[in-house]
Picture (spheres, each protein chain N blue to C red):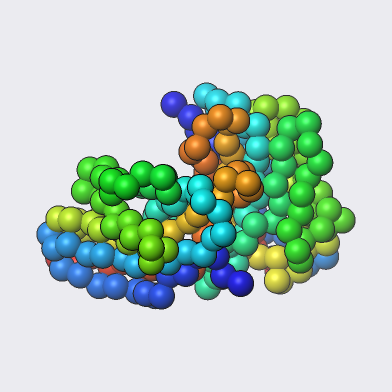
Length: 115
Length: 115
């Protein structure tokens, strides 16, 4: 069964707007970590932001923020003031505490930011 | 800072031959190294997880006989794709983590083309 699901295959937005990408996850563990990465055109994976399951506050880093809804097992990524260079494929990932070394990835959402 | 280098970045091999890819951690100790494959149009599949002083754990559909991995020290890991065929093509990523730290650092990947 898929542990991390991203239903949006692709999104297109205008520059300087705000975009939200969805991600739901599945776990039986009480402690886990959620991540968002972006993959550039060259294939490079870049870490963006992380949410620890025990933290109630939504994480924020620069123009990235998370909408963590634990009861819904949902971790949305919000990008404000989008820029052309934000165009990439965004992956949601989860790591569970017992299997601490393994990241489970979603299928990715391709974001295109247009001028 | 923590960096992970993968080489070669791109490689082409003939069907039925083998190729070896390497992963080098700089600035931290790669206590555990996970190898992933991103096939065309697909998300990241975990191939195997290697932790220093522990047995290498392969995921279902991946075997040591096909993807032998070496993790001889805290800065280096290599994986070989033996007897490569078309279905083995894709981007192979190495993700390394230091014990006690949450972040996984990824290399830029080795893109394998099989002809």
